[in-house]
Image (cartoon, rainbow, N blue to C red; front, side, top):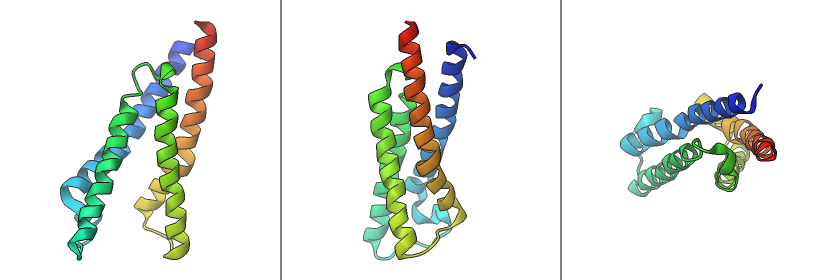
Length: 135
């Protein structure tokens, strides 16, 4: 595969992956826990916190999307965002141990956070190294 074709493939995969935090975060901001099929949260502070964290999740999606153009040069930002997502995924491990196995949607998020994102970080770093050697 040529470097340009690989760049386009990496950009496409990252753009598609960005849809997860953008859609999920956006819906969670607008609808709160009802997005997940739950009734309104009492106390209200938990709803507020849920929407706040959803806003951060949405913003991470926007920030990842900002890495798509010129992805070969966005390594530091990409790694920082990836680290944030991985720490969030590791935090889910604490919930899994303390409370139990979450729903299928959260298991999907778990896989994105602890499998897909680390693989994307490795791909972006390897690609950027090859791109910079050829330039």
